[in-house]
Image (tube, rainbow, N blue to C red; front, top):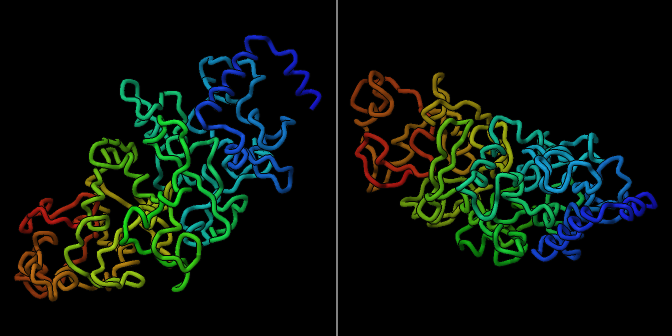
Length: 439
């Protein structure tokens, strides 16, 4: 501590002024006041081994000290290129993962960050850090996020080209662990934290957490939310393993995610080499839209009329997944099969007649996807059946017939997402096209 005081005492006046203005700016904007920062995952100041605040190796600073990230004694500060926030390394897309990589390269203690399937679903997968998650088959591309929020002349919500993409979803001075200081444990009703801050509120000081207030929960967003089961259970529910099922213990992820994923924003995906599909969650069947008909479903989605509203994270991981399109590895109490291929049209690759996306859909929809006919599953009793048997070849090709008007053979199944995806409707197909939504 004597070394620290010595350095501060002999800092040049210019730097002292800059540091003072920096701290004043954080406090006046409401993002780094002591009563908030010290409650955060970065700002906890308890000494080891109980302390879990930021603690960069070799600095000598106390746990939770600002200087672990904001290196005021580095020679490349004062807003020079690469160091607009006085960070200890360049503020590139990987700055946060310098520590969030489950190693001690920078952090004194290896920082573990589990998947949502692990923390909310209770499924013990082997994903244990953010750096790993962003390197999986599909991820929220950090470079794409940077482009979306910080492109010059199109900067959104106060972000700039210098903003780190992780701050699009997290207020780094407020974000809490969930559960706090328990990286290898799933959430529990007695150990909760709140780690998100809405992108669209970034330019509205103080930029607070999202979900910590009871008005920011799924039960307020909709009265039709039903929590899925936790892994291997029919009595414990996500996100915290309790018996609560109405979403009163769950962050309103739908409002959070649709700040970006909506019908107004165009988001380009470098991985898919196309723009992401627009999402109108107020009208989609898995959202607030009318489900039209009640299909056979698995518990706990068996109520009547079955017009449930899902949460985005019921199906998707927030950071990265070994499955395409961020699909979780565990959904509604059981493991989702591997979903790894997708073709340029956006339809899952069915070269080998696989039906990969059915692994996800069958976690909630109760059907024998390997053998059931689309007609038989959807329309055995519905008065408004969308397809006639003679129309099978419109999607499956000709020659097999499969219950239609063309022979006695059976056509192979096609992937669910050839017809069912965000924003899809029958207007996208040749089978009596209409505006009826298919998702």
